[in-house]
Image 1 (cartoon, rainbow over the protein chains, first blue to last red):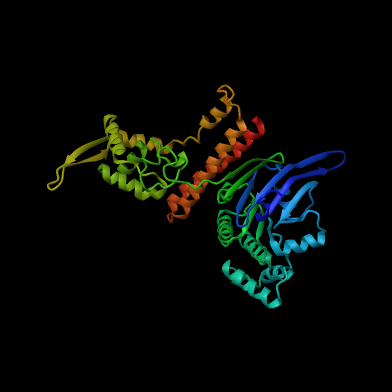
Image 2 (image 1 turned 135 degrees about the vertical axis):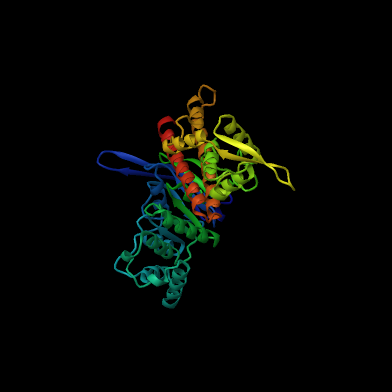
Length: 262
Length: 166
């Protein structure tokens, strides 16, 4: 390992993935090196087919890479058995999907509680954690409902509660707002912000620029390689021509669509 | 700013400062507040073009103020502006010019150009999000939402440019 790599939460080295079909090989990832610090919030963006979901799934252990290494908390995980990797994942990684993936014949409460139990919490602790999370997400009234009775935004909040049941150090999210309207997206975005403020690292894939711009870092993937990795600059007064003469009420650089046109 | 001023004057005559205050009240924090000089210059031009007329109102304790009023020609111009569909955003795009002409200019790193433009759009998106969070009125919120949708489209288009040109 390189110097300082010990302090990383997640690291991938030369990650590749080739999907092989009948006589054709499709490279989805062509050597991705990624490093994420504890508590960091990074968004992965890129056109469809750029490999962003594949990357997230591999990092989350949902599918194996073709070659390369994955390190989690200083431990190499890509060579672990499925069972070992699954245990590690339940303890350290939370996953949120575009289509929520809740267990449909269990109540909202049980969906969250089960995740805590599977992560090793005692029955009592799991119940406490479930109550805590549902209260935090404003879902107490829906605790005994079946997921299908909930709106998309509510289901995604349940999925977030489930993913956070074990206070994972890494939250992975694949298009978490992809299936939500603007209000639902905003709620999810707020929750991710809260998780981030609590010190959880977040790695999410999105095509929603609003979600991406909330991250500390935006990683652009194209054709299976990282083409840009940018720390998000915080908007500052006067970084755009026009901001100064617009007066003190305009605290941030704004697109020209907001300027008065003569 | 000509047409917004005509629209405000259509309701009742007003002087420059009142118009400035009204613009701020209607559009809120989403709009850069127009400076008063700009408003007076625009009013003078509107008067020169016969779309408004003005008269000085004598004030005893303060300097006289000039009150502007819509003329018939002004009302006509306003109605025709209201009736005419507005153009969508530009076809002439400054960034696209750079991208296409970068090779001529000897700076052929198109991916670099696209990356830095993407970073810029994303930081603008972040600024808009902060503005939206600080805003609790419906009209400014809608305006900000519109700007966000435009930005999203710009980012999608940037991706298309990358697919085709890099």
